[in-house]
Length: 115
Length: 115
Image 1 (cartoon, rainbow over the protein chains, first blue to last red):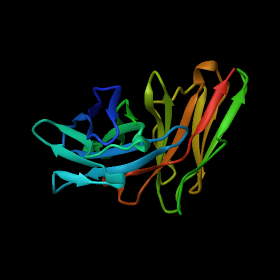
Image 2: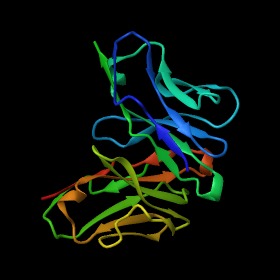
Image 3: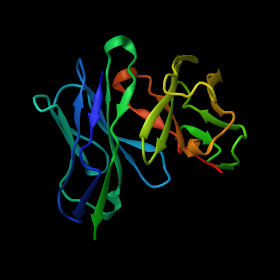
Image 4: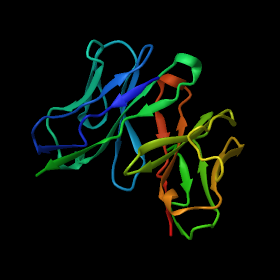
């Protein structure tokens, strides 16, 4: 069975500082990994994904994520945080074993960027 | 700008009443997911359809919840009778044609309050 862990319920960072939101995963086959962002009273929006290839993937709004197979991690990063980045962030994994392809989401991490 | 449309955005009802939530997936997307979001449980998968056929509804309380796709442009989630513990935000998401390597496209959600 696949699973995703986001060990931090909340991350606080000052504007202009780098940010990291952590995610670890467990799948039986090759991982297909995603990050989504949710602003208040909105649906989830896709940020970026790792399917194959370069371990560092770049996405929307200046975010990037690094796939680390040995540590089974896919941490979300941004070099310089903005107050407008404050939102709820979800990591997700899709498992192709069994053919279901159902995405599993982490519980989410609330990112708060202080001015 | 293609998007998933959900109605109603907000619904307040009394315990015991029937509630129907509707979702229009993005044209051409053949897989539809229903998720429920609460503070306590995070994002829970309730059901999903591929090519209008239900593939997994194991996350859905069968005695009161039902999900259908009458046609390719409409998915419905019905609760009858509703209970206060059903209060949550219900999201519909459709899957891009790239299948399991693709990201989900979420609607803005239906916020349900059962009094």
